[in-house]
Length: 429
Image (tube, rainbow, N blue to C red; front, side, top):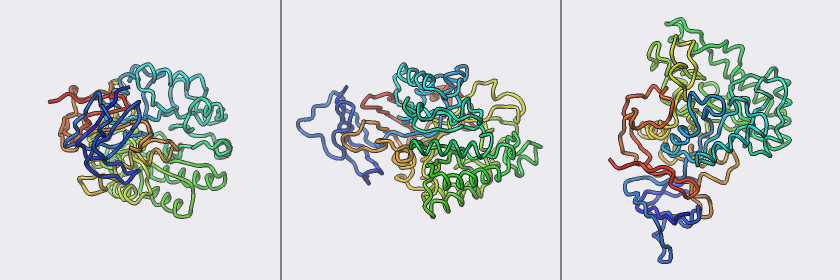
């Protein structure tokens, strides 16, 4: 592997409390030294001048769909890992709702093979909590863990009842597996497509009350205390959920949570009528909910930011709003939307980077998310001032389903290194 020096950049590494201008030396795919000028004996084969840019650990995304295996008409590993590299993301967590579902070691091996073939090996599979994600019979969680799954989840599918969920959590706890849940009371949400508020009322849309999330969250918190299971709540969207998670953490429950980056910016007031790019689950909620999500991120109640990347083909987003498939193609807006939070004063830059690096690594128990000498050289270099437009010339994902299409965003990845390899380099203007 190449010996690389990244020089003149502002190095921000929340895991090591580092914020200074200096260099990063890389050899054999690992970080050799950080924050000092290259040593006389270190001969670099490549020098990357990061002047005016920020050098930080590569981002870790806790929730993505790459649409393979099973839905390659929507996207492929090739297209979406290219989008991830262009977004500074060096580790992707793949949700188990593939086709077939990720409920056997064979499917896990297939996912790992697909990742290797496209030269992006750091796709971490999340195993299915139940067989075929049907919520009735438990999956072989130990075999999934041995095959390489970093956690288990039922994705967006409901468990049949609370007893099955309890047994699943007990099984996971006995093998030290993290359980990831997007809290949603399936029957209460009643196949809705928008928040139960003024937008849904105005346009007569089937709606999802905030209580669908908070009731499911409360049940999971009770079961987490009962079973001792380590739980992570994904894509939190409401004020009362933030309050409940804050209380659970205050009283020592071993839980963590993330929020999708678009939930920190968009509300039901931003939805353009009949534009299915805004159809996401959980739905975009109120301005008050958004402000609580921001506060929860700032005070540590919400640990991480994720993209919740869900690329779709054109057909999936055609038709009446309730008939379209939910989800947003969001990998490539992850960095600029995080930087917008910083610019708006919701969080500081170090906190934003930590929510994409150190904290996801802690949630998953990974030795990543830091620029510590000896660790793999997963690095993102970005220009926080570069303005770019979301269009066909700048977009890598096969899914164009984003409400930010055609808009100008601030903050652009310049280089991405994964294991010491440069997997993305922005062409000069």
